Amino acid sequence: MKNFQLVVLLTTALASCTQAQQPEPPPPPPAPDITIDKGIFDVFQGNSHRAVEGFTILRKADGDTQIRGEATLALPGEHEGSDTWTFYPDLRYGGRGVKGYDLRAKYPTGPGETHVRFDGATCTWAFVGPNAQKVGPVTVNLPLDGIILDKRIISHYAIFGLQPLGPGEHSRMSLDPDTARVAEVRVSEPVPARIETPLGNLLCTRLLVTIGSFGVNLWFDPDGFLLRVEIPHYGISAVRRGTSGFPGLRKPDEAHVGPAGEEFQIQDGRSLIAGSFSHPAGNGPFNSVIILGDAGPQDRNGNPLGGTLLWNHYRAWSEAIVDAGSACISIDDSGSGNSIAGREDETISDSVNHARALLAWAREQKCLKGGKVGVIGHGEGALLALQLAVNGDVDFAVLIGAHGQTIDRIFLDQMGAEMVRQGVPDDVRHDQLAEASELQKLWEDTKIDVWKPPQVPEKFALQGAPRDWFRDMMRFDPVKLAAQLKTPVLVMHGDGDMQIARSNFDMLSKALADGKKDATCQLYKGLDHFLMPAITGDAGDSADPDRKVDPTALKDLGKWVKAR
Image (tube, rainbow, N blue to C red; front, side, top):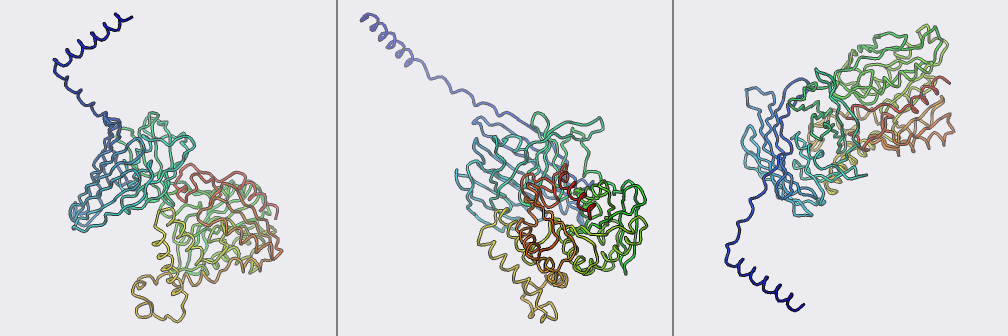
């Protein structure tokens, strides 16, 4: 045993002498960066080509991920090239989230820069503008797994394909380098999807990403590469070159006409009202409803003016009502579709008069004589429905996503909730809400003859246009109207409604119960303002192109109208 130990010691000593005599080997060369993805996106607004965005995504030797690129944005201007903006983004992500972000920019008036640095708990943000103006540095808190989400640069969304959320995880905190605000980004479950191409349909996966009312759809191929981006609220889509996807926005839907129906137009004063009249086969008599839409303008299908978002919820309601055996009248709002507004400053009282003209027209239709005539009011339209029911103009009313308080409180609640979701600091939010409340009081002040200083503060001098509309809206208190109802009413509300919060349903239901009214109040779990399934719980869910109205809610609606 002793001899063995001696041999080991001698061998070790000899090896040490040999190593000491030989030069140190050179360090191994650094591992090369690995290109994960590289491509170019063409960005469209409608069918107009607005930008080209090239990007490269690298896996660095130390395991970090880097996204860098060049985006050239061309806006229409008086002189060619006068409104061309070029961005050079460079992002760095570690295993736990963002490390740094740099953005150099060439604006029409000069260069600019944005810089973000992450130290593990906070981000320091600074901006230098094209005219040497400086903002920051500003320090904000950001979790370790936080992300940078610059909505100006489409290719940055590719990070959701590179760093998928963990099991059961549907949100991340993000820093918006435009505002230095931190807000929660919510991500839907991936769903199977397809992209139209000249050679057929390309199968892929789609995600919905939302921050408050902002929503963006992302399409990835089976290997996780980003193929397409759509931001419906802005009418923007981006298509990766080589995928041959349908460029621009989705094709507009057709107006709905039922199994036996017709297009119609009626004149009410100087206004022309156009819509669709759908009813079951046969001579009737049928019960009928007129859909009175939410704040718009929107067409008879419920889609906003311009066709960038195709919700089609009114179309679905109409089809359900006709399928259940009743008739439905859906209209284009004043100034949208084929309807022509009598004047630009129409108020809710004008809308009540338009509805009365429609009701008179409906009662003259042969297949409706002998049936009951009612209205469906959605959101702001529910105020019209309540007023018509109180006036005795209708036999019944349906209220969907209805207000439970006056418009001043609705606006302040919506404004406050959206600022919370956008990461606006508490002190800023409180100041802005106080200023909005001050402006509302000025709108209501009948002592102000002319909207200009000194009768109004200088800061509000350009904000007097909504005054007449706001005053008129304030006359419609849903709780007071509910106390005067004499007709049956169905109240339908989704508990996931982020536009008109569930508390409004509670207030309206209580008023109807206290007044012992003939009311059926239905609260639907997991549905939003359109009676569609909530996805991330944000108002930005409206950007999802595949949502449909809940079939149970549709069945309840059709059955209740038929039973009147």
